[in-house]
Image (cartoon, rainbow, N blue to C red):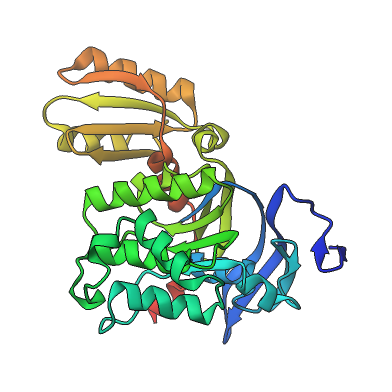
Length: 322
């Protein structure tokens, strides 16, 4: 990748462009030959089970962890040789609350602003308090906050230096649904203002908030692209089944040729396959038999994720078995 005066030839439309990223810990490859282009001004989600390499991949892409192989640029800077320049332009929100619980909200934000050498520090802290709805709690000790309010404080802290790129590592773990919804509304406002956000998650309701998604399993990228196009690109067809005795029906369907997966979503079954004709034949036969109601539907991201994970090989399986 050619760079000129510290800037990448990838152009301003890409926030990140990396190829062949590989990371090993001991004799275990945790990220394997990873390629990715992240457009500026988007939310890019990294979806996968715990331990799949999401956080390690994101940290390498942003110059926070040196890869063992591969390279590229982040915000126009080389991820290997210009990591300091990248760090100055990145806000990183970790899964665990990492601010000082014995300081007030204002004191925490002021401390972070000092660390980044923010000019007009007091005014910037005041603005952060207002933007995240924290002004009325500015004197409250951080350790006394609920999960949702700690989340707001964490977001305010990682935005205090006006970064170009925001890293969110499992950002809504342990918070209530309303706090999660409020959080995502704030992230969307930031992205609409030009920020790029990378999000590591395994929550499907968070995945739908993303413009782009990469499915990662056991160190490998299974598929990446626009979120709304992922199920179609895999080639999935789906029937939605409602009615009584769904448990027994699910067991019967799993033995039928043409059906790749049967997943229960509350009072509904998603019956999925890659051979649409074979799947339709099974659906029509069972629909005639009843008593359940069968409806052709579009598969979603969770259907795609289940399908991809079924074919993924756990690179820690031999360790677990031993």
